[in-house]
Amino acid sequence: MNTLPDVPDTATVYPITVRWSDMDAYAHVNNVQYLRYLEEARVYAFKDWFGQERDLIDEGMLVVSQAIDYLLPLEFTYSPARVAVWCSDIGAASFGLGYAVCGPEGDDTVYARGRVTLVAYDLDARRPRRLGPSEQAALQRVSGPAPHLRGDRREGRP
Image (cartoon, rainbow, N blue to C red; front, side):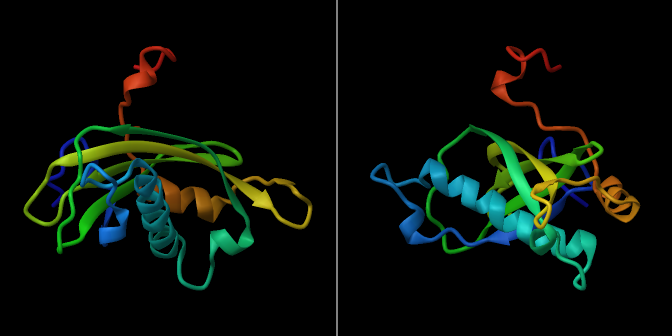
């Protein structure tokens, strides 16, 4: 059972190593490293969600937007942080992922929340492609509400 705040039970949680080199001059994880943590969790999630025999990354998947709220400074620890990832919306050719970057086991603090929008992409034709029924079904199994970010009120999101 998931105990992370504002993370749906459908989310998949991955341990992500916080490296000493991820730290900045203020002795906490540098902001750009969070996006790398989201990327790493996404790579693992795609293998789990879509199967080992099929890799959406190789077939073509592009990040078209990213948004992240840095809530608290994450400091170095020898135990891996955890990144929760889930599908927050599904379109014809695109889908959104929600994320929560959390402390190691025993620390359910959410240090950052993020959203990423991806589009399925036909690499040969160099254009977006529609998500297939099996892709939509896999995303539906891990779907949950989008994480609320600070800029949502300005954009008219609830």
